[in-house]
Image (cartoon, rainbow, N blue to C red):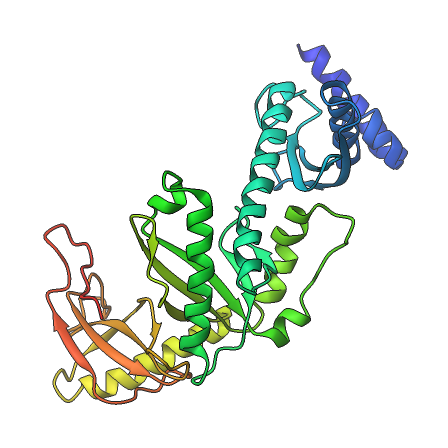
Length: 343
C-alpha cells in the first residue's frame, strides 16, 4: 500500500511539473465537463439512437463532482432532458446511467406536455408565458399593474389560471391544490429579458437561471389565486417582490416608522426583523398591508425573539406607514407557531 501511494504521488508530481493541461486531464486522471459530456453523448446514442442531441454541459457544484448535460429531443422541440453524470465513476446522480437517462427522457417529455397545456390556457386569454420557475412553475407573464388596471389584469390572469386548472382535469394535482401563483412582470422589464437561443428547447429557454435573474432585477408582482375543488377565485390578490437590497430597505423603513409609533405605548419596544407577506390593497399598487412582530421589552441580549405581539400596518411603496397601525396580541399557539389573523 505504501509503495502504491508513493507511485501515485510520483505520477501527480510528474503531471504538475509537466505543466500541460492535457497531461493534467489525462495522466492525472481528472475528468472534465468535456469528458462528462462525451460520456453522456455515448450513453444517449446507445439507449436513444438518433433521438437526443446535446446542447450544453455545466459543471455541478464544487465538491460534488460530475456535470449536468442538457439534451434536446429530436421529436419534441419543447422538451429538455437533463442528465447529471459523473464519468469518473460511471454513475448518473448516483444511479445506473441507463436507468437515469430513461427517467430523464420521460421527465422531459412530461414537463413539455404540461407546459403545452399551460401555454394553451394562457394563450387563449391573451397572455404569453415568458418564463417559468425552475420546476416549471410558477409561470411569468408581462402586464402593467397600475391603480387603474390592477383589478382588471388580476381578474384576466385569474381566468387564465381557471382555464389551466380545467385543462389539467379534476383529478390533477393542480386542481386539488389550495392555490396557484403567477408572476407578473412589467412589459418594459420583459422586453429587455435574456431570451437565450431560438434553437434551444423551449423548456430550456424558459427556465434558465439568467432569464429569471434578468426578470427579477426590478420589482415585480406575484399574483395568488385560491383554488377550491377545482374552482379558481379569479379575483386573486398580489404582493410586491423586490430585489434583495430594495426589500431590506423597505423593511428598515417600515420597522423604524412603526417603532416610533409604538414607543408612545412601549418605550422600550424592540422590533423583530421578521417580515410577513405584504399584500397589495385591493385596487391599489401603491398601498400594501402586512404584519411586523415586536417585543414590548427586549430580552437579556437586547433582542426580540419569538415575539407574541404583532402590528398590522399599511404602507406606501417605500414602506412609509399610511393611516393607523393595529396591534395584535397572542399571535403564537401553544407550540410557538405563528398564527397571525388574516387581513
